[in-house]
Image 1 (cartoon, rainbow, N blue to C red):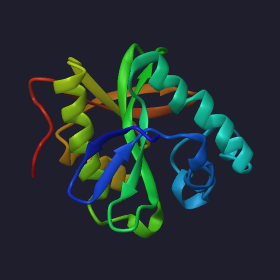
Image 2 (cartoon, rainbow, N blue to C red):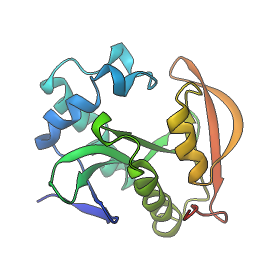
Image 3 (spheres, helix red, strand yellow):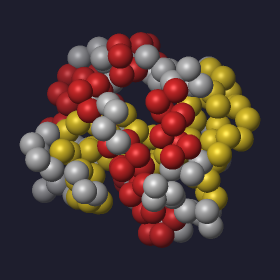
Image 4 (cartoon, helix red, strand yellow):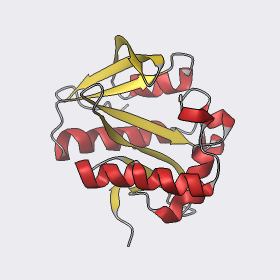
Length: 178
């Protein structure tokens, strides 16, 4: 039984499971999608590798923290079109918001829609004090999403071998609704 977490106008956000390996593989191997992500080794190598990463990352995060990156399911089609969610980053002592969508869904506002719901969940249900967003500044679309969500630039940080911009939002600020 799949565990649904959030619903937006166009998306259902639910926990990943091993049955999502084929969709997760595309999200972690398409050069256009992972261009700015810094995925180790250049991304996922096959569907079996995707299943292994689902077990060792999102599913492990759900068990350890009660949250993680969730599958974004298009309500109209029932297909996984991306992911969005929170991830605890022990190396930085922070909780990060992240999102990734199939290129066919870029520019439709889905990352912002999912991000608003994710931030609300983090502040209201998880009572987080702040959330960060790490982004390669060359990824202008992702920077725009963070800014639309109300995160503000807060310098840069070294993370998984690359220098990335850090954006921050405090709980009292809450996500922007416009």
